[in-house]
Amino acid sequence: MKKIVPPEALQFLASIPLFKGLPRKTLVLLYGHIEERNVHNHTVIYYKGEISKELYLIRHGEVMMSLGEAGKTVRYLGEGDVFAENSVLTRSAHTGSATAILDTLLYVIDGEYFLRLAGKEKTLSQNLMRLMGIRMREVMEDPHNTGYSPRRLVCHIPIEEVTDFKVNLDLIVDHGRKSHEGQISLVKMDTFKGKSVAEMVRTIAQLRKKSTILHLYFKSPGLIPELDKLVQQCDQIVFWEENPERNLRQKNEILDYWQPRIRNFSGRTSRIVVSENGLHKHQDSADQKVFYKGETFARYLVSKTRGLSLGGGGARALAHVGLLKVLEREGIQFDYVSGSSFGAVIGALYARGETADSIFKMIGKFFGGIEMPFDPTIPLISFFKGKRMLRMLKDAFGSQLIEDLKIPFATSAVDLHSGQEYVMDQGPIWEALASAMSLPGMFPPIFKGDHLLIDGGVLNNVPDNLIRRKGADVILSVNVSPLRDEGIVRLLEDRKVTGKSFFKNLWEDVTYPPILKIMARAITLEGREITKLRKEKMDLFINLHIEEFAFTDFGKYKEIIKKGELEAEAAVGDIRKLFFPSEK
Image 1 (tube, rainbow, N blue to C red):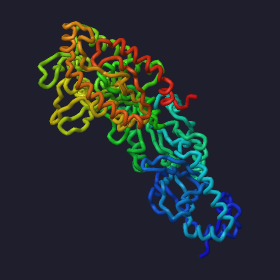
Image 2 (tube, one colour; image 1 turned 45 degrees about the vertical axis):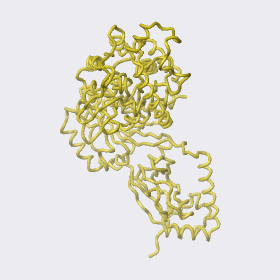
Image 3 (cartoon, rainbow, N blue to C red; image 1 turned 180 degrees about the vertical axis):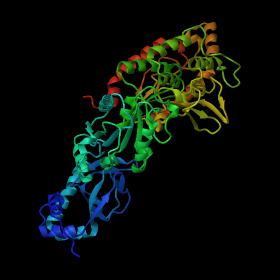
Image 4 (cartoon, rainbow, N blue to C red; image 1 turned 90 degrees about the horizontal axis):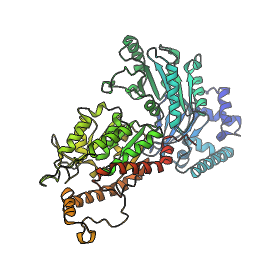
């Protein structure tokens, strides 16, 4: 039976540059070999490495092209775009993958038939060569495919009456604009009432040409079945509530309605609690991400959550307090924090909600008096007992748990038994920090079950990867350990050369034994080489030059913090560029 050709289909084909100039008879013949294929949103059309046998033309919808193992986005295609032509022409495997991100109607053409037709039709061959030239120019002008801006479609659904819902939603969108390079728009769901699914998809595709992040929202709680298909197109569906203990029946009805209708419900939905009367973090829903901080949530929606990773370095890590002063003045807040060694102590205090000034006062209390955190002992396992340092950590953090901190936090140690990194993101804070800063030779290792733990900086001195795993998208990594020596470092000096008295020389050797200097120096050299190898892969690596201070110069905390502040001020431009890409 002869396939009937709708006039609008012929008109559509004639409008495509690849088929421009072809006679109507050829277009009719071509349409007879087209398979109309409906592809649901978030469905893969083909994977990298598959052998191509088909050419694709988008009738309506949107397709995301990705390249490489990490699925880096290359470009977005919409109505009228052709793809997979290179693989058909060269009879080779796809170099990337293609995914429908909205419900998409594809015109699928058999590759062998298309090549035979191109061999007969000179106009089609010329159009194909012109298309290949455009593709080549796109690659040459942007070889690393940096010219795209990720797109996201978000739907906001209140599951109870939320006070100032629109005001809070506007704030979320405004915060997102500060962290995102592209345009962000907010559209009422009522705009799409009375439209077919194809019309909804076309409208969304048109809006996303101007706004890469599009927020759709229902004005009030309730269900509008005619808009279900539009909600199902969204990458992220957000359920809003004010008090998780209120209106439970209504909320459960709404959530029960949506759960079977949204594929990958736990992966594509989240909840935000806009009242401080909400649940604590450890009561989060097992199948949904729950947010309590509007700014963090806003950055999550545009894949720009911020992380801060503070490197270790003994007393030099006090420079991080100066960094925090600068970050506070710039109004830069973070969603995840990690730290190594003494940098973990500063990071944990910040994650608890302490300001730079309050941390400064605590440091003055601990290191500004006569009693220092070092308590010498017979050096069988270590040169210091570590009891004073443990007491300081317990005084600072008490019985607080890592999971109860205001900002998600992680640190690490090294397990001497397995030789592996041991990550700590839950449990008593003081206990985790004691393990994280147990420098071999200086403090005794910490037993934790079957693990024997030492300073995590031995393997991972700027642990950005710990919060990358948790969800941090953009991370500021801060190093305070010298990456190179300005001159020869002399660990063992002749008293005749230095001119120091016998008793001063003896006192220095007793308080900071030469063997300990040698061990610390060896660990520092190893750690900095690891940091050098890793820093090129970090989003932004800044090095605070604190080389003039020694590993144990805790008594000089004021000078170190001030130097850290000056160093951080010099890097403000790069930091703002990282976190506020929309600033000109």
